[in-house]
Length: 356
Ligand SMILES: Cc1cc2nc3c(=O)[nH]c(=O)nc-3n(C[C@H](O)[C@H](O)[C@H](O)COP(=O)(O)OP(=O)(O)OC[C@H]3O[C@@H](n4cnc5c(N)ncnc54)[C@H](O)[C@@H]3O)c2cc1C
Image (cartoon, rainbow, N blue to C red; front, side, top):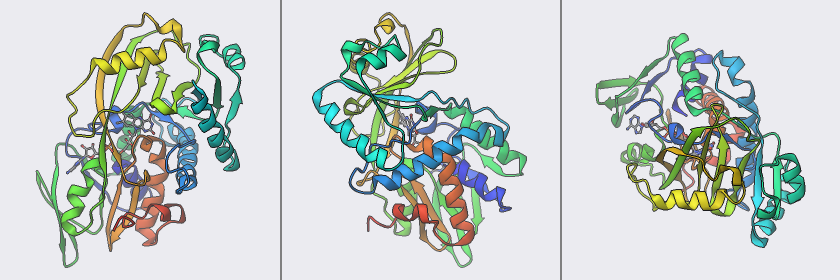
């Protein structure tokens, strides 16, 4: 998010300086799956349509990023199939279907037989239905970060790694950002540090309530590319996709809330295998190569906090497990908000001060 906002500012002739506390991709971006979805399942009945608008625009912009930026983000319009495994899944997905179709999204209900006819590796007996979007896609988060980084550098932007911000202080003509490697004067400050954002804004009087939700991911050995759409089951948070190198990458369930990135469980391996193998039996003997944990920053209303806290101070966090999809549109809209000193319409529902 930080790189995308800096990119938006520099494209419009502003100077931008990004301070990254660790290494690029150290946060959630480098730990996610890179699934790009517009059928966002959160905040249903409480502004979901605002999330969907953002996701939809993000998804659209991702489609042309590689050519706009001149760097391959490994974007692929592979689609996404949400499966119903039981009657409750089916009821919920049919309600979602009505809602998403009203919002103009593609959400095609398919019978198990139709699913298997289109993707023969999916066992029709393991599902009751599938809800398919051909528009949803994938990108490689590292490619995305690299694209923003190289474009920022080309425009003369500065990105410093291993330079953690310790404190932000208000001064008479702006802000003083106190970081590990020194102090920086800034006219505008944008805090885009995911789950750590509130630690920087709270001393200035702005608490952003967020729960750190830990989530595990695994990746397999590479196999011949055969996977069509990402496969999801919303009730268990199962999400499985194939990378362009052929690895199968997946996640399921949540861990206890917390900040520990070092814990990886065999329970997760078992749960993912138990959920996935019946649906895609051909994966039965796949070797798992690596497993890791990431943190999702969840706000109480499941929506992100994006925008102005006070004159020249902004925040951009709370993207839970859907932020990569929104990176290009949020960077565009927040940089426009900063330059015009007026919140863009699409960002209004995400006012970071709504939790006061
Ligand atoms: C397991 C998992 C799977 C996911 N899958 C998907 C998916 O398939 N699709 C999708 O759209 N989204 C997905 N997400 C969500 C997505 O990864 C995030 O919403 C998105 O990456 C958030 O981007 P960000 O820039 O806000 O945060 P981050 O990528 O976490 O970046 C924040 C950066 O701030 C830095 N930082 C923190 N504190 C400081 C400080 N004091 N000073 C300087 N720098 C600091 C961190 O080092 C970090 O690099 C997933 C997330 C996880 C954890």
